[in-house]
Length: 311
Image (cartoon, rainbow, N blue to C red; front, side, top):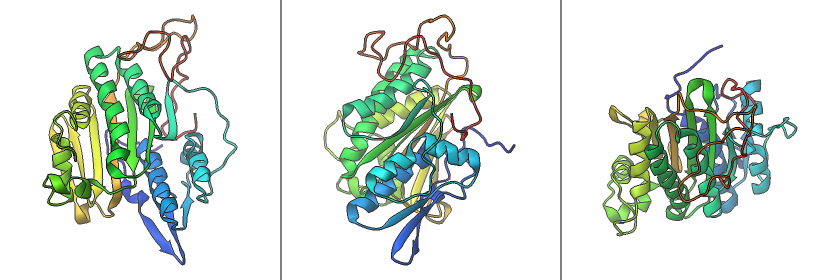
């Protein structure tokens, strides 16, 4: 079986739409690997078309494991809710993977943003409690703010990969994009807007705003991970070695809106004891143990499978 580097950024070119007669088609059939970024991104693109009354059809992955995975992560349900036709199966068997998965969901309120933050925190707290607490705060802020800044619906998704020692999480919207959002703050183009965002610039002249993304970048790199940020015709991947920017032709296809995917190293993190009803992940900041959102005390994660295989 072919493999890929777990820190490699998602191939966002698969999120580009092509025109077929009177409708657009978002075609994921060429995806060899489906990441949370593809799922949240596809949902955001579909929401953008639905809001504009622009006909869209989504073609799912061809590879059986990727196809089952996309369906298990509820992409088809999200598309159904938006009235967007697709070919994803709706009969994929499911078992409780609350500790390992956050299926694609719309960010309607604080609880949706916190659900993403809780999953990330729960899998990193035993590795580095300080970094995990900071990540919880930053991820929740990013998830809440992205749609607010964009003027469009935001979506989140996440998956834990125990065998790789990683958790991948994504936030996406199909809105204005960073160049437009930060135009009044001096953004001169897509690439410059990315750097402004990573430096903590917010569309609002409030010194307390914009810190979420900065904090996420800091803690993700501290946990041997990376962060990928795409908007318009530019994208940047941030690792402990610095920022790696791609723009224009190198990106191949612009992403209308903003897409964030974080990859966090959790290798060596203690897992909940599934056999004896042992303790679950540490409670995130501000929540008492036993009331952790998105977890089931005493129920550990199922054995890991190859990424993209339906859990």
